[in-house]
Image (cartoon, rainbow, N blue to C red):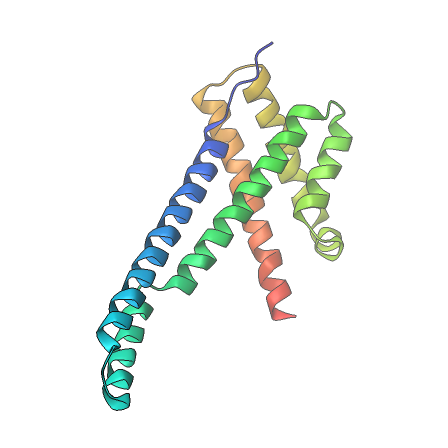
Length: 167
């Protein structure tokens, strides 16, 4: 029996690669500005250096490195969670154990207690859909089932994260 690759995990990886490339591009541009302005500051008075430094800082801020780092971090987290869930589904034969492992990776206990039915339902749908996709039929319908369940799981993890920030 061949295990088929799913597009969801490939898309998460592509998103991470894109975020990494954007960060790398912006970091290189910032370093290039740093080098250029350091060269231009040689021999200038303190006031002229200060003005040039302010100009350089404004240009560097335009690259929005902090936002790009955050985007890269979110992409890495998403890829890690998707990868972990896929690994569990494909490697843990016992369904109950598999479902429990996925829940423990994705959700905190307090969130699980308050949202048990929804969490269980969505993880079970994801698990069964992915298992069917990988082992039975990799059809567009099976793909849609996996994506729909994962989208619900991501909505719940986002709600959990929002709760944690508010606390």
